[in-house]
Image (cartoon, rainbow, N blue to C red; front, side, top):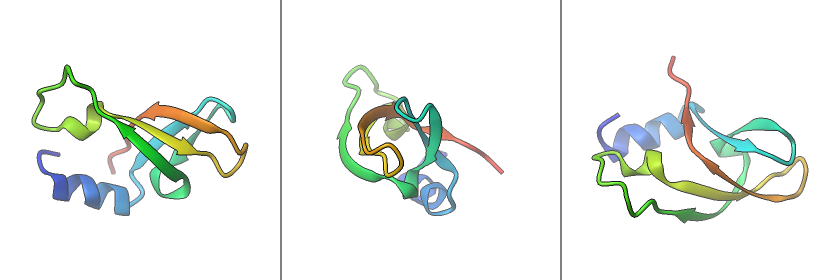
Length: 74
């Protein structure tokens, strides 16, 4: 996934996941309320979005969590 368009398409297709420590479950990227994105300053990779940490509100346990992105191909 070498360009932002592919990343956005993966999000739209429901292939990007976050981990909620409060629920101890994975959450689909589209099913949570996104609060912030914390960039990884050490990453100079051509795909920087995979190294960011997302801050989100979980709709199930009503907590604010931080998680790195996970991609589920297929």
